Image (cartoon, rainbow, N blue to C red; front, side):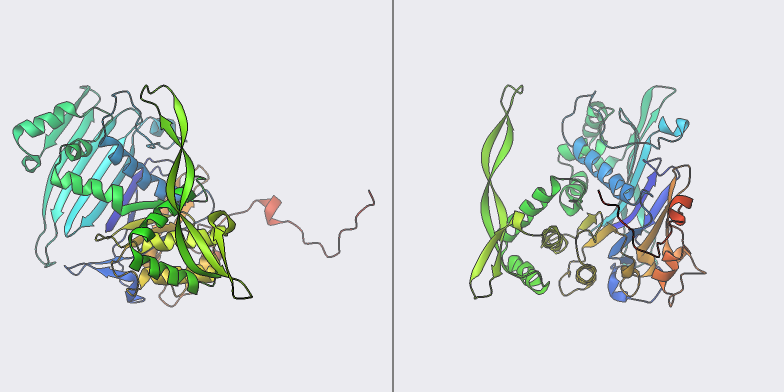
Length: 443
């Protein structure tokens, strides 16, 4: 379960910005919350609103950058390999030379971990891993340990590092110190050595965190639907539930079928110098529709609408029958889907009927209809950007004067009460409305 995400000097976010998933004080929509065994409450979903290019997607990019770096660090890397995706704020000369920072707090079966990483493309500048055993009784003080504390000293040209004795013997810790290059996290090295805590955190990034951005990445749709098909094939009971949701979504689909698809896949030869394409087989989806005469017609994936494909992939991801709680990050939740279908999707997320595992979603959207009656104030972040390109974000329940529990949040947002809406210049602000049809000249 995600608790908190902090971004600093990352892409358009210069100052530190934190998204907290801890619930606020409002009593509205209690079913949208998760209750920890110690009584803490957290939201099941978080929506990022704001005008175009204000930093909404950058929030997802920051979490993706941290995830990629963690997984990157579990593999052997050349000391000259570049660290992926850690991009500092570029519109300030001094900040562009400083490391980008991403910090994450997650709760894994009652153990809370904080991973705080600062890095440039060529090195780790700081890495901290804290662990905290959360007591079942909130009144008891939780014990915290700093497992990893690593900091690059540019004056001494060396790392100053402290590793907790819980990470292993003196020999193990010495090996971690000596074998972790500047472009790799010590967390990744510990995981490759089989350390239980490091491996559990790595598992969360690898299996329990997923990103869905099929409108931005032309290859992600294939990956999403292949994963969906594989999951439906392996779990017939889950496949039946997804099929029922698809049928009741009024898409015209009666049944889902998993079929083998022939695909051309790139294969690197043993020499490593040549790439060849070889034919392979992967699971795919077909969709059964009913014709007017009662017959059935099978549609392949490319015959279905993008909204239908997105809905089935998101439903499968959100309701994934994993034994562990998952976080699904979705860029533009409402893309290609009818607003009424998006509302039903959010109800599925917030309800225990289907999402009894309590999986969470973090998503961007421009669909203001979701603000009223579907989301709490503590589930809405408003992203803004200054005229100097600096992004900022604030949770709606921090606007105490304007975001009352009985307020029309959609109207207030569109009226600009919270910011995050475009401020048009005169060219677009004063576009005249014609009173007469345009007379066309014969040509």
